[in-house]
Image (tube, rainbow, N blue to C red):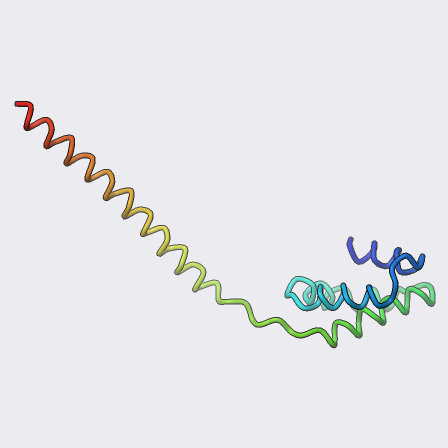
Length: 113
């Protein structure tokens, strides 16, 4: 959707070429932007109806090729491991708190007798 807005702005000359190059390079420097262009590239390039639309898509394609490829995302396994470790730590804190409370309650009841 944002690409269509950029295209309309570029075609009406509200978005200058320099700015289009900058924002598209920024978009293509991240995984979601690169994934989008990999999927949409052929359709968008082949369905450009006007000279200005063809130029727009050519610019995007050039910036895609020139944008730095982002580092590979961390393995989801390491994210799961950290999530499990955090969950285990939180559970241990809750359990320790409950045990401390139970022991305190038990000690108070014995001292009252």
